[in-house]
Image 1 (tube, rainbow, N blue to C red):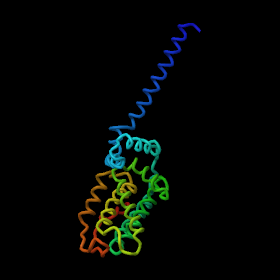
Image 2 (cartoon, helix red, strand yellow; image 1 turned 90 degrees about the vertical axis):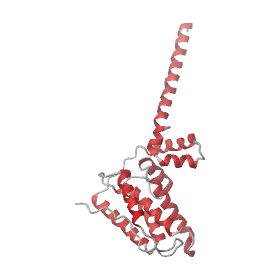
Image 3 (spheres, helix red, strand yellow; image 1 turned 60 degrees about the horizontal axis):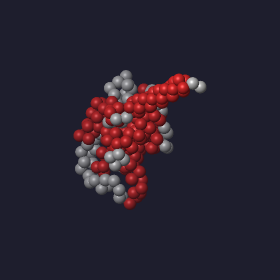
Image 4 (cartoon, rainbow, N blue to C red; image 1 turned 180 degrees about the horizontal axis):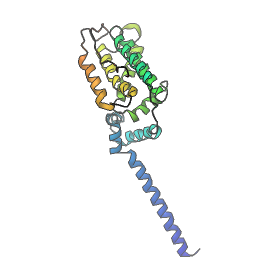
Length: 230
């Protein structure tokens, strides 16, 4: 092989390596920095905090979530399904008055069920389901995380009456409602505006006259579920 051909081969190899490197950097850019911040919002900051401020580690985790779950397509709910789930959530809220811990545990199970029906990983794989939900419902996924943690802590407390106070249980249920509304939404008024309005109404209308350490709450009020489809 002549010297000219050797030089040509070297140049071609160098160009191929350079192009590959540029494509890799471009692909990473689509999932990193400002793009991840925009996509995940408050979930981005929570992930950075969980990694003790290590932004690179947090972005690697979030990029992996997008890689695994970004292509997920939610299965639409039929009107009858939406109505049935809305009625079950209303029943959860009503049950809270007499049995707050049991109501929060039921809310946790209901969210897992609805997410599974919409096409997310099965609720039996909570961490994977949560990761997938964070990709598509980043604004409200922390409500699910909170209600799941409170339900788990309540179960661990057992029958001794210790554990999470009533106020924290109520707050967890209100926060979880935002994700629930997102999941059963028919595709009309969606996203943070509607669900935040519902959550705000729930937080503002709820009035506590009982204690916060397991005493019976009194005259709780939550925002109501969706009206029936016409």
